[in-house]
Length: 259
Length: 82
Image (cartoon, rainbow over all chains, first blue to last red; front, side, top):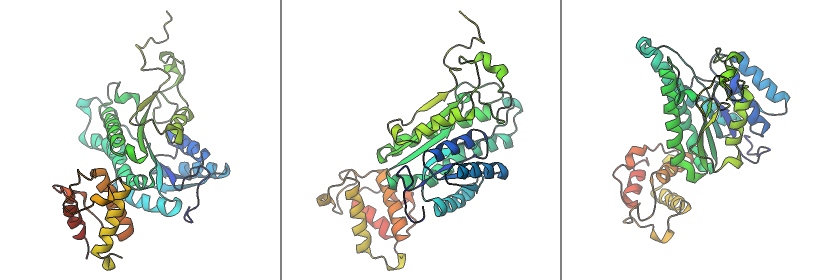
C-alpha cells in the first residue's frame, strides 16, 4: 500500500476494525479481508487473539496487521492511526466494534464504571471517527460502521451504561451520516441481538425459544451485514441502524408460543 | 514547507479547492460571502485537511467562527503562515 498500489477491490486504503481479537470483531476482520481490504486488527488486551486473526487472514491470502490501542484514549488512537496509515494506507473502512459493559441496576452502578463504558463504547468511536474522517472526505469514499445493540432501544434491567452508550453511538452515527454523506462517506450502525460470543455469556441456545428464528446468531452473521455496509453496493444506505436479531425485537416476545 | 509558503501560494490553493467544491471561479472575490459561494462548514473542514496535508498547517476549525466572506476566511488562513 505504501507504494500507492490498489487493493483487489480497487481502493487505495484499508479497513480498521476495533476490538477485533475475537467474537464479532474478528468475524468482521475476516469478512472485510475477503472483500480485498487490508485489515488493521485492533486489540487492547488479547494479543494472542489478534495474532490468530492476522495469521488466519494471511493464510487465506489476505493482508492484516495487529494494532494495539485503547480506543478510549484519544492519544492512543492517534498513534494507532499513524501506525496503520504508515503500514496500510488511509483508513477508508472504519468499524467501531470495541465495546465493554458493566451491568448493574442504575442505583448500584458506580460512576467509574459508568464513565468507562461511555469512554469505550461512545467516546472511543468519536476518537476514531474524528481521526479517520478527513482522509475519507478527501478520498470521496468512506464507510463507517458502528456496532450497536438491540439494547440501545430495548434494554434489559442493569444495562443503563451499556444501553446509553450505544444509544449515543447511534446518534453519533446519524449525525456523521448527515455531515459527510455528500462526500461519498456513509455512516451506519448494526444492532445485533443475541450472539454466540463470550461478550454475552448468557446468550445461549436456552434463550433461542424467544427468538423468532429459534436460534442465537453466530458472529459471522453479524459480520455479513457489516461487510455489505462497507461495500460499494451500500452507497445509498446512510444513517441507518440495522437490527440483526433474528426478529427478536420485531414483535411482542412470545417465548416460542404458537398461534 | 510552511516556512516557504507564501500568501500567493496559499491563495491559489484555496481557490483551487473552492472550485473543486463547486464554487464559481469567477465569483472568488474577497468580498464574496461564503454563502454566495455555497461554501459551508464541511468545505472549510476539507480545506483545512488539504492545507494540513500539503502545507503542514494545523488549522483550528473554531477560527472560522464569525467568518462571512472569502477575504475573512483567507485572512484566518494567512494567519497560520510563519
